[in-house]
View 1 (cartoon, rainbow, N blue to C red):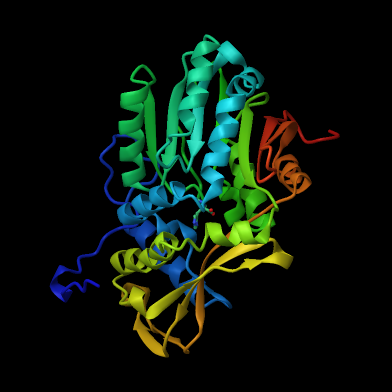
View 2 (tube, rainbow, N blue to C red; view 1 turned 45 degrees about the vertical axis):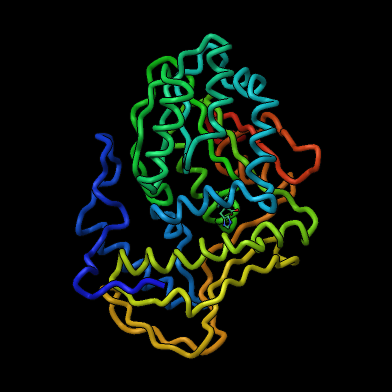
Length: 350
Ligand code: AVJ
């Protein structure tokens, strides 16, 4: 375990100064103060929480990439296979040759997106790719993967937290936009905030633009449990790394090793809950968050929920956010689904 000396504990922002020219969220004192307030508010909630976006500093983005390569972590390869098999049908629904703009939220390394871009080009489209991610490291991976795989595709990168209001490059006039929210990340949200998030995406779209949402489905609890409790301990390292990031952002003094990784699949809520549980009683200096945090032995901080859905729940979320469900694509093992929604022009029944 490395301990940094106080002198080297320089303050780092959640959204570091970006290297790409296009930035939706500038690093400002306001944004940093708001991030500290949000951390304070979530850490004092019952149960205590830290927002999942804090997973994705450079080290966390790399650990997540490793998770996606684990045998136990089935969602990524299941979704990738679905996208590869159904890319041309998805692109056809999104306007075929008229598809001008592919926007991805939480683009990560974007390795799954290449199949869709290829299908668009086969259909005669010349799409631009707009990647939105909170992690500069993920943006770097995206750039490298796309420059190597598809150098002809123009890429715009937006370094931003999409759980907050978002600015996107203007949609090219006349064309159609396809917005991707993949990986099952919608499962990090409870219903209310999921609908809010999807509704905000709808605001960046015009009628007949298409939304593609990836969702984890209810399946064998043992399979789900193993995906978040890999024997190599990569997911545990990913979970603890969140505390390193919080320390870097807020000057807090969490000791990641003083917590154990606890990730049960809660059957009645149909979701994984990731927790960091205090091995011993402790008091943590919260740095610029202000105050100190007292934790009893065995007390936990929840770092993520990751829901498994039934198909109809996914379609209801899509519908409630202003999209008409257009198509449902499900893996043969019924573990993962993709919902395609067409942006509605007006409120239903109006
Ligand atoms: C990136 C949010 C889809 O919920 O499965 C992986 C994150 N957490 N292992 C998920 C995650 C633990 C992942 N998402």
